[in-house]
Amino acid sequence: MIVLDCCAAVALILGTSEGKSLEALMERDEEIISSSLLLAELASALRKYVKAGAMAPERATWSIRELGSLVDRFVDVSENHVESFCEALRLDHSPYDLFYFTLARRNGATLCTLDHSLMRLCEREGVDCIHELLPA
Figure 1: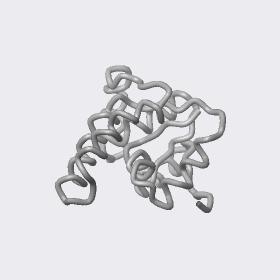
Figure 2: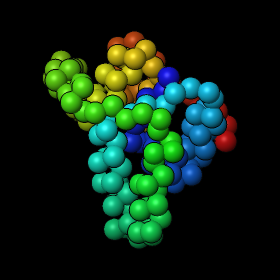
Figure 3: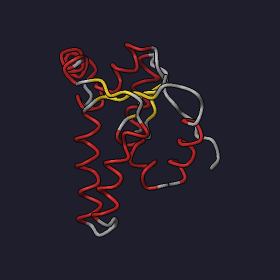
Figure 4: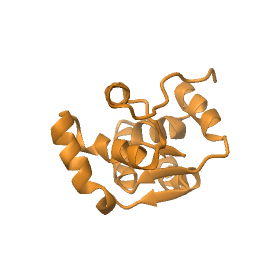
């Protein structure tokens, strides 16, 4: 099982070299889940790309719609919001990241992220995380 976070989703959508490597990893026959928070985070991130002129509004809208094809199941934030908050306090880390972190930990899943501070947190706390990307 793979947990997809916003950084990884943006790389997939933009088709970066990291995103292409992640896509190759995600083509394995594993369930891909994410927090419902991803929908809001992705909308915010893509808005910034549109505002900067780096992405057409139509492409951003299409990407938001197509997110469902990347994720097999969204887990509602209400399922782990207290745990994520408490862990954010304990670990002194962003509560947004902890939604994905706790989801991966709860499910014994691999967290798919390109966020280096989140990768370091996973290493420190024993949560499986994709660390090395395959060549695109």
